[in-house]
Image (tube, rainbow, N blue to C red; front, side, top):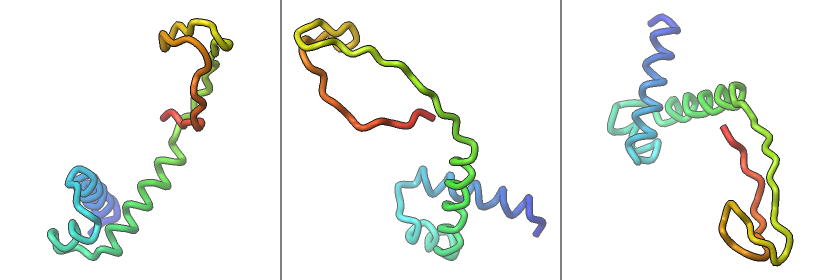
Length: 87
């Protein structure tokens, strides 16, 4: 099988696995695949996603204590959250 056809086949399996809600092992067993091979292609897809990821920096204005915050409609101190990656 040529490498492009094989890659396409595995990309389709990875997408189908993600949509299935099954574990990798259960999906592989149901489709006659080796679980280790599916895991390899899932990891390969994640690595490619990281290489292609685009990061966005955003400036966020926070209201001071006691001031009205226009985005949340709340007064007072906003809860702090962990930084999040936007892709």
